[in-house]
Length: 406
Image (tube, rainbow, N blue to C red; front, side, top):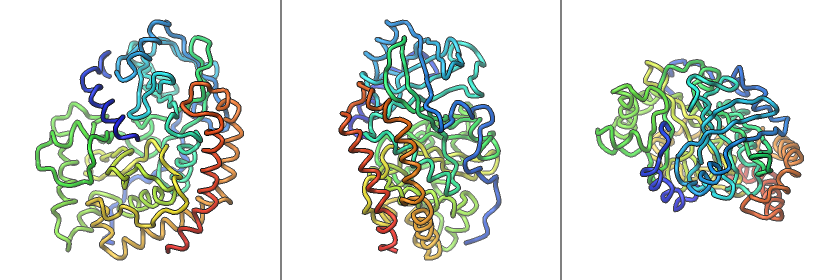
């Protein structure tokens, strides 16, 4: 994310969110389903199809959404994807640094005006404008690698978007991390889902026992919001990260986290040269944190991967010491090896020209015409082609860089 823009947007949002609503043995838990299926949304997120989405909205409302793109004000519209219509949905501008007047990213709430209305089993949908990735491919490729490494990630599919029958550009339909995702991918949905919203550089340091220091920002509850103790488990987790004695730290973390899975998540971020994730340059960012129901155990879910494949040369242990949780885990030689081995495994199996380049080329051919015809994207067609070439180059050389460091 562009931090300065994010801070401006978040400051404005606080005042204008109108429209409403807007090696110890580790206990077992439901295993995510790599490449899994949220039961009703398969066709909506079919990656083999360049979808056709259209919005019908009062022109003055669409202009107001654009004029007030830093606001969370909702507007009524009708949405159709591949001929399947849903009426009277709420749409608003979305994103942090990606918010745009010219090419708005959108959040769709299907039940905003029609109670209990759903679309393919979902109550909401993200229509991502991809304004921060000139290749338009980074999130697609990143989530493929997470999935291949056994880390549940949102599904996504490219779409052409028209608004009142005018072509508005190439967008990305992104599966919301919500109860359908949780149930299908993690095996349950009764727990508490936190959306991490970047506010300031944060590294899981202890900020004191006051809940308000953690919730609703930067950890924003998306489920169980009305529970008076919604943040109790989260605060206890962060306290343990900071205050648990070294001798018992791994055992304490194993009770709250699948440590090897978490290290694999970090390893994928490193393999894809992620600069804005859990070990981001500006601290934690771009993830959801789910607390399993009645278990006080957590799992991290990746989100918003448009700042990946930044360079083929990426230090193996980059920023690992800059985060309280990762620093303490990596202090154990065995866990440090788990992490390093997972980076190597990701590179040798997936982040290489043999596996990932065909995925890139298939997606590129699917979107190229729509991307070149997208006159509202904030980069030129030459920059789009250059962005794709840049990602190709990172994929071509990333495995060799990781091998050399190992």
